[in-house]
Each structure stands twice: as structure tokens, then as C-alpha cells.
Length: 438
Image (cartoon, rainbow, N blue to C red):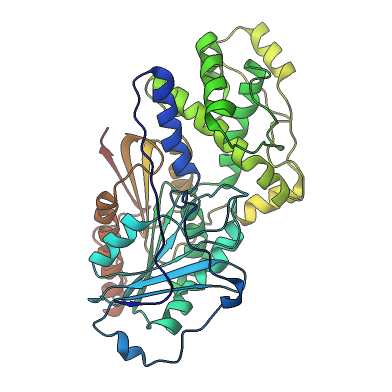
């Protein structure tokens, strides 16, 4: 293998439990791991000195890579780390991997996508990945730095014949926007548990859960929606207090579930508590970052909203609506969320989205919204009846990704043959399918 720059060190930690509190703790850890990026929890990823920023590999004949595996790492001028991998038996296709949300304040690092990368390499695909130059809701940075990877791969290793996007969670949103705004650069996109419906409604989901929790359980969590605390000890700052509060007053969780505009995901108590902790954890991690990105203005809006449910008595509803904290989204925040989070009706290349039916972080309503906006035979949506955020193995993802590639190849064949008819496998309005799994 031809290698430039050292390999990444990656670490995973597992946890086992038997008690309810520990079960919830494990569920949160898994959920937060997905929330924090489906990607780069690891602090041991290499840091490349700034002096090597945007370095160019020494002049070489690209034919030297023919029949050889290649690994190249570097840093963009913006400070984003990138890594390129090509297998020895390359199929001349490149996959741009787009990682998920990473906690603000943590060091910029390459994503922990080893299983997916290795699975793609084993199937003949080259893989390119960027860390993004900042963490948090870094959609703008992610779009810019990921879109540049194809050119970087071409200049460092070889020119690919086909390029595909592969995004998870926040990376799904980045992949959606690149698909719609730069379709000439790609042959297809695969979006897993992505914010594909609307960033605004994702904010409304997290915001409602936070303000309703603070109303039903006042004083349990520190900070507020716009001024979050550093989550340095999840057990002490989040899991323990929330589990204790819900155990003492389970009716409060039921009321939150009845009043939230987008209810928590879950078929049982354990799933609901895990979803609650997940949403609250995300508000603690992301609130201050999003507040700063919207010019220190409110990004959530419930100013004119009346929280109501036919299952609750009028006096209780009046009390909750009087006590709940109110926010008014600013014009700056409205523009920001529209620019970095709204799908458009046009779709020019094949796109597949994959979601669990009970996703605690990016709820499945995103798929409903996406179907409402995009009415195209190029859109395929798949839902799996399972709990969790991005709980798919690399092997499972390869099955769906392979279907996307085959679908994209069929579209190319029709185009090359001058056939204007829709693909036989694609129905008007897109293809929707569900798989029942637990």
C-alpha cells in the first residue's frame, strides 16, 4: 500500500448494565454517540501541523497507483483534515463520506468511520473524508470542504469516473444540499438518518422537548435552550437528574409527549426515556453553538404556539402555557435555517434516504417532509422499523448503498441510450419502502 501521513488511532468503549438507570445510561451513550456525529467521538485522530496545510503530494505519475492501494492525508487551507483511500482493485468510483454532528469545543478530528470505509474499500470504491474546519452545526463548512474532496482526490491520486455522496445524520443534510445545489459533481447520494426534511422543524422538535421539560421539571437542568452548558459528565449533568425526575413524576413525561409538536420516538417506557434524554442532551450540546451561528439571536419559535391536548384538563393546559418559556425566532435565524437546511423540489441525480421508524435524534417526520417537497422518480426512501439513530451495521448500509449505485447506473444507461422513459424501478413521486425490523 502507498501511504502518506500516519494512520489514525481509533478507540471504542463498550458498557454493560442491568439496572433501569444503567440501561438508560447505555441507551443515552449510544444515542449521544450518534448525535455527536455518527462519526468522530475519538480524540486520538491525528492532528496534522498547520504548516502542512493544503500540502501537495510530490510530483508523481498517477499511473504509479495503478494496481496499488493508496492512503493520503492532509489539511485544507480552512484547517479541515482530509483523508483519501484507494483500494488496489479500484472500480474507478469515489465515495465522499459526510460525517454527522460533532460536539462544539472538541478538537477537529477525522471521523471514526473505519467500518464503513473498510466495507467500501473491500467493494472496490475509493473513499474521501473531511473533518470539516469546525464542529457543531457546521453545514456551511461541511458543504464547502466536502465538495472540494473530489478535486483533491483527482489531484492527489486519480480522476474518478463516478462520485457518490454518503452522509449520516448532519452529514445527511450536507449531502442533501450538495445533491441539490451541485448535482453536476455527483452521480448519486445515500443519506442515512439525515436531517433531510427541514432544519427548522428539527429545531422545533428539540426546542419543544427542552422548554416543556423545564416547565414540568423546573430546575433539573442547568442553562436554557440558547445558553447550554458544557456536557463534561453526562451521568451527573444529564442522565442521573433526568432519570430521577421522571422516576419521581412519570406523569410529567406523559404530558410532554402529549404536548410536543413532534412527540418523542418510542414504543415503550425505556425508549421514551432514552429519547427524552437524547433530545435534552442534544439541546445541551448544540444550543449555544446554534445561538452563536445565528448572530446571538433566537433560533426556536413558540411565541404564538398554544400547547394543547384533548387528553389534558383545561386548567392544567392554561397553567403550562402560562409558565412555559417563550422564544421568537429572529429574521437572521430564519434565513440561516432556510439556507442551511431546507430541501428544494428539484432533483437531478438519484438520491436514496434511509431512516429508522423510531429515531430519537432526527425523527422520521423528516422523511414525510422530504416526500412532500420532492416529487421525483429519482428519490428512493426506505424506512426500517427499529429504534435508534443510525443503528445500522456497515454490512446493512452496503446493501442499501449498492442498490443506490445500481439505480444510478440504470439512470446513466437510460440517459446514454437516449431513453426518456422513467426507470422501471422508479414510480412517479419516488419509491417508498418499509422494512419491519426490531
